[in-house]
Image (spheres, rainbow, N blue to C red):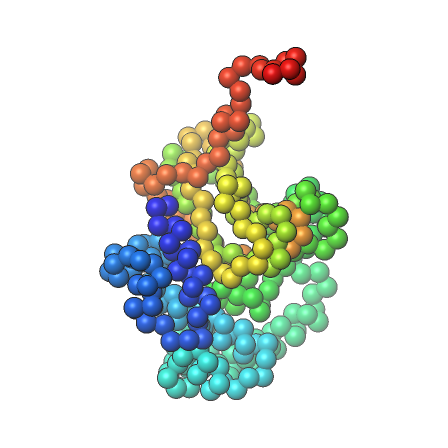
Length: 291
C-alpha cells in the first residue's frame, strides 16, 4: 500500500490527458520517482505497464464513443493520439476482437435487442442491499466503462436522508483463501457523491462473527472523480466461512465499478482492516456526566 497514493495520483492525471500526447517525461514529472522504479511498481500493482494502461483506457473510451455517437472512426483515432486509422483499427481489434466499424454495428444491434427483450435488467452475481435499497438502483452501463464493454453502477433515486445507504455486493465461500492475506482491487468513478462511497470487504465466520472488515471509511471517495484504482487488504483467518464485498454509496450520488480482481498477497503488505476494538474503552467512564 506504500505507493497507493502515487499510483492513484498518476492514474487521475492520465485520465485527464488521454486525448493528449503523453510522454515518459510527463509521467516522471507526475510521480516524482525514478522512471524504472515507478514503472515496476505500477506494473506489479495494476497488472499492466503504464503504456499498456494508457492504450487500454484510450481504446475503452473510443469504444464508448463508437457505441454512443456517430463520430467518424478516423476522428476518434486522431483524438486519442493514434497516428492513423489503420493503427487504431489494429489496436482496437486486438482488444475487442472486432474492427471499430463492425463493433459499432454489432454492439448497437445487441443493445437494441436486449432493450426490447428485457423489462428488468439484472446483473449476474450481484444484488443490492443496505438500509434503504429501494431508494437506489443498480445496473449495467455501456457508456461509462473503464475496460471491456460495460461497468456496473449504483445510484440514488429517491434518497431523503444523508445517512441512507445501499450497496451493490456479492458473497462467496472463503474456502480458497483461508489462512491467506488477500487484496481486492477495482476501478471506481463517482458523480456528485454527497456523503460517502467506497469499496468494502468483510470476512465472516460460520457463526456470522465479523473477523475482518474495511469499508474505506478512513479514505472515502466523495464528490465527482474520474476512474481510479482503489484496494482493500484483509486477512482470511482459518475459521472464515464467507467473504462479502461490493461498492457502497451513502446519501445521494452515483458510483461506477469496473475491473475488480482478487489476489493473494504477502504478509508484509499491511492490511486495511478496521479494528472495532480500537473504539472500545478500557473501562466505564464519566458515569456521572460531570467530567
